Amino acid sequence: MEERAGFRPLPLSGRAPRGRYWVLPTALLCLYGFFASLRPSEPFLTRYLLGPDKNLTETQVFNEIYPVWTYSYLVLLFPVFLATDYLRYKPVILLQGLSLIVTWFMLLYAQGLLAIQFLEFFYGLVTATEIAYYSYIYSIVDLNLYQKVTSYCRSATLVGYTVGSICGQVLVSVANWSLFSLNVISLTSVSVAFATAWFLPMPQKSLFFHHILKSQVSREMKVLDCKNGAVIQDDPALKSVPGWEDIESKVPLNVEEHSAEAQEQKVDISKVLKELWRDFLQCYSSRPMLCWSVWWAFSTCGYFQVINYTQGLWEMVLPSQNFKIYNGGVEAVSTLLGAVAVFAVGYIKVSWATWGEVALALFSLLIAAAVYVMDTVRNIWVCYASYVIFRIVYMLLITIATFQIATNLSMERYALVFGINTFIALTLQTLLTLIVVDSSGLGLNIFTQFMIYASYFAAISLMFLVSGIYSVLKNYRRQDKMPSRSTANPP
Image (tube, rainbow, N blue to C red; front, top):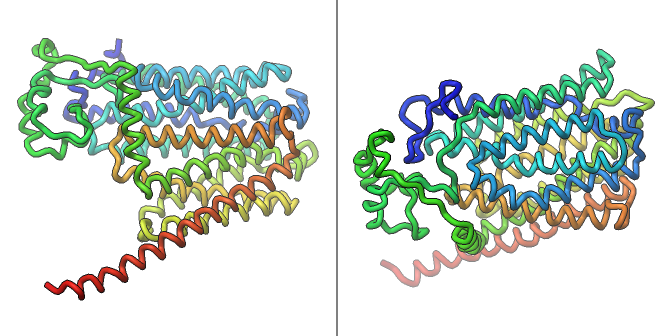
């Protein structure tokens, strides 16, 4: 089945064969990411729902429809996380593509509150299955290519989103296209993405459920002392073990001649969950890891809320039925400048171990100020500028947090920490949505909501400022004690 389009299956060892096998699957995945993100109608979603096409009220959109995305994302995240690994990525990528098609088809033709709420459920499925897109490529390529292919795949979605936003803005402002037509373009684009996904090769391994082992390697590896108590041939940790290349060279790569020696170790669900729990306890026992993870979870919760409802705020500040709006252009500019900030992170030389918490506090305060200005200064251009600052600062900090968390983790543990942090963020967002947004809770108006979001980020800033000052003082105290100890104990 996977021989089509010129692909040849991975050997059962789970490693990509020599040569440039990684180029074609990476190119296909990037094409999928580009077209899946090329949705020119998305910056104008709120205007479309409130307009004559759907004729929904502000209360229905903000307090009854948008919260469904948060709830569905939270409910689907953990089962999708496990299913992605168990099904080996590709089926879940196809599910994401199909969900995108259903979402935009319903956006075109579905009518009524219940139908649009159902649409939001499918969009929650789209975002929950994003993990398959970002983790698929690691099961195809060698370890030394991880950084390169990660940058390609993330850049593809970034470029797709930017191109889509610019196209949407130009078609609305210059060509006077209807928002219905933009949704037709979005549906076409995600359909192309879905078709592209069928040509991706099926991985032979995954992080947790499908470990591909050679019987000879299993016997040779038993003598090695591994941190996790189990040896997996494709574990990056093994690449640094002396003699690994010698052992690997003894393993025949010709699957057809040596298929009798190959065996696939399928881990059952209870073993996987026990291993995840053990890794969870070990990962979060580190204070720096806990610090960056707490900021990730709390700030991502606030970021999702602002992103979800910012179009509603703009609509209240400047009704799109009476004035021209530039949502697409603002989204494009904020994405591009955010990408520049992310690129600049690699050149920032800071001792994050010492100053990381203080930096998080100060930048979180800047985010709080941007949200506050967006809420209180009822000028659309000030709102646009504040939103751009908000996105740039968040993208900068989340990149630093990702790097700090990933530095000392294996790929398996990074996936676990990423999943847990996202799950906590969604849990917090669900509580915030239930209390502040949902019509069954307080059902506050959009301006009061944004005042709460600004206060939320200010609280995050205060929390990390106190913790950061304590860490800096503790670090300097430790440095002061070191000279005194060396003086008291001369060599």
